[in-house]
Image 1 (cartoon, rainbow, N blue to C red):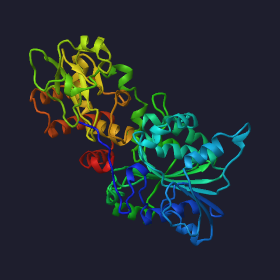
Image 2: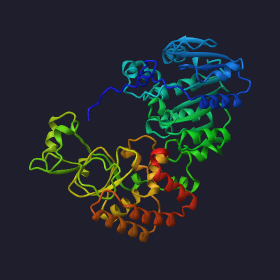
Image 3: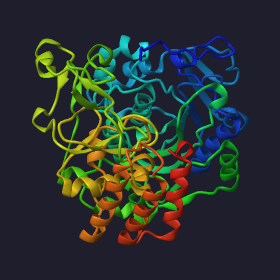
Image 4: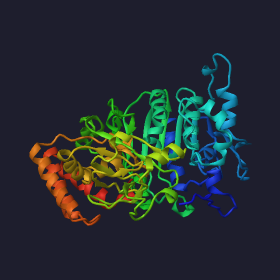
Length: 489
């Protein structure tokens, strides 16, 4: 598919995607500002570094609290605030990041920092144009997107005790790229609240973003964290906020902190399922790898086998399960092509043509299909193993449990790399259970159908639940999550 510049124009003519401006719903703004004041009741000074139309500030203004605001666009709505039309990241870089010796002792004088920062990713022109100085200023956490740089800057500049209330993309909770940001956050702040927002929160503004509300306290004493799993709709979210329907959990109950993890926040995960992360991971027992990137599929792949293109190529099962035909066929001389074409890359050559399991790379649904011998694979995750393990792993990977572990716990974006698949807990089940799961998977595979295996998956689920002693409540949660995955991730 070709890549085109995506534009989302608001009623005021602003390109939302380029500027990253999405207005905060009033009930969310009131909740977040109220929560910040609940933690810092004596606040005298507030900062919003990306104020937009100042939706987050009415409660502070009403209470007579001094407010300072920044934005790159002057929306003309700042009568009660000290507004500066400026690029806040550049202001941060010049004021806090480029100070002389002992500069780390300096902080902002604000008691509360509140923000709904831009959600734009690395494709945005701003990051491309400023990559050099951004890379230097944000070297500790990386230049991955706008909101993560704002998060880091605000935490770093905040004074001890400052409350930081944010509405941000929830990708930072688990994405591998944000591991340094999570480490910095945990080291420097107490986590007061994490609430996952419904997927339709910004739908009216044509924004397909999955967001969360985060409240931190700089150098605070860590206590219980108020947690809310993702509601199905905005109406449910309003209800949950109004009723204060939060769980209070210890930080250790919402963090993955083993040697195989990177401080991922797990929200709404039942304790019996969370304990599975103490098991070995798939990558500790099996090779979990990527393969070939053609650089130009249209040029090098054939949809049907021909005399010149006869090498089966599996690139993304997506929502298909157990069986799928090859996605395409590679040229017979693909290894020669790699020597001539700079963008044609063949990784893990020694593992090509071996059998195993091929897993999803893109899409909300997670699926796994049998990878036959004498086939190649793309940049999706592929588990290389013999027949003894391939069949039961195939069944296990298509279970409700793994679907939840991948899409509900480990990854809340839609690109599933081999690194994530390698970290899926490898549950400890008996040889007889493995054999039973393997037989079910083998029958499903031999049907040569890519979809419609509900009965087989339910049988596999039952075996796993019995082996792992998964509670009835957790079983129900897994069923609901699988059925409503689009609204739950």
